[in-house]
Length: 121
Image 1 (cartoon, rainbow, N blue to C red):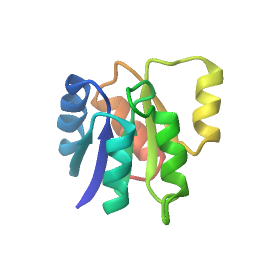
Image 2: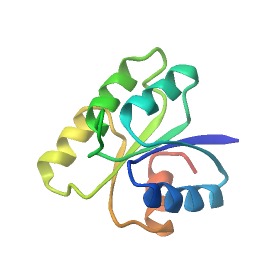
Image 3: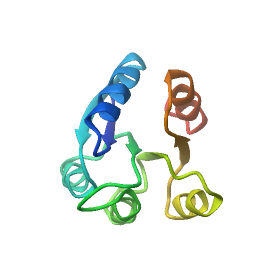
Image 4: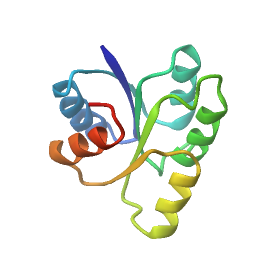
């Protein structure tokens, strides 16, 4: 079964994402900040990461840079999921190694479409 790491400081967002992604046959691992997410990735890389931008301790951008430097860290498909919608943020995320970008709030159709675009389903 494919795994998806959901990284968001909001337990509500993690719960919504879990419900959607489990419906798409993903096994879900959760982290509430980038530092915890990085520790999870060091133990075993997921197939996908649904990543918030603004979080305490380590934000999504910093996590993404650290993930991509890990051995095999170029493999997980990373989809940023955030309220930041200006072109500069999107370009910065994609330049840092994100595969796609989703705006909050999101729903099953949006997540499904983006995961299909990056080849996860």
